[in-house]
Image 1 (cartoon, rainbow, N blue to C red):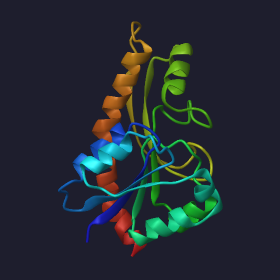
Image 2 (tube, rainbow, N blue to C red; image 1 turned 90 degrees about the vertical axis):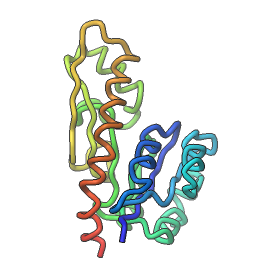
Image 3 (cartoon, rainbow, N blue to C red; image 1 turned 60 degrees about the horizontal axis):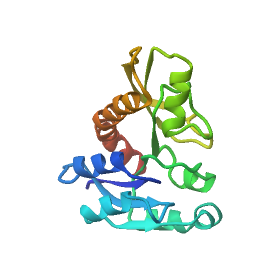
Image 4 (tube, one colour; image 1 turned 90 degrees about the horizontal axis):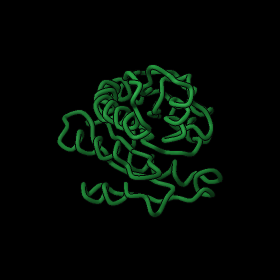
Length: 195
């Protein structure tokens, strides 16, 4: 039995795309559902290209009902991956999927994490503080933004002539390189813990 992966994304979904590509004909894992809180998110088109079912939900549905949990249970999701998803995960979802929700963050946590710290906000803060390195963190999700246990970090150097665009690109390259492999390494662990 393959580990069944559900992806949450709020925007373009370039990481989601990499995961859909990586697990398309994979022996151990498959992406079974893509969910978003944004009806205009380009990730919906990406999922469609891979013929992966999608679901758009409202704030009300996510925070005040169990609809999203029911949907995840219906598709028998084993692992939930946040790939550029900007809302805090509610307690009910954390309880329904303990140690089965992971996120990717564009900094070396605990630096530059927390509410409002995503995408360009992170990279601008890194530049403003003259950091010499930045990177990515893949971590388990808990009830606080970016505070769950770290699974994997990867770093890149920041050169004196780096700009917002160049550090964004460096970070994205690391994300695309590491995220699928880290998820792959978790597949068997997740599967045994949910059986």
